[in-house]
Image 1 (cartoon, rainbow, N blue to C red):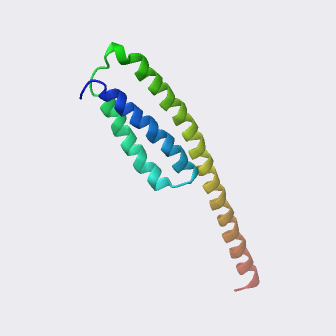
Image 2: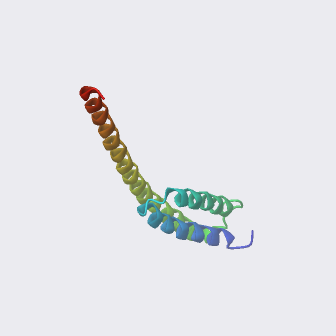
Image 3: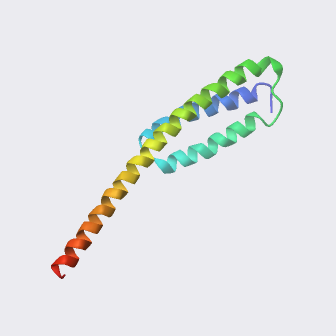
Length: 107
């Protein structure tokens, strides 16, 4: 790992986190999962070696930004999960109503 590689990796992870936000808003869960796996690899790579003291402020700022975006990302994902749960609940209620109607009509 060359000097500054950790900063490049964290920068790429930050950019990927921003991309993940758009993907989550589009509810493209498969793509989001793939991006998360790549992002984890970048973060692991960034910390594969000790961070030079001269880079610590830049690294800390990048980490704080990734954490803030990740919190926002979790919120968007939670909203998506809740939306899917509501849709599934509505479908289940519809099935129960059809079943009850079908049973009451003798069919």
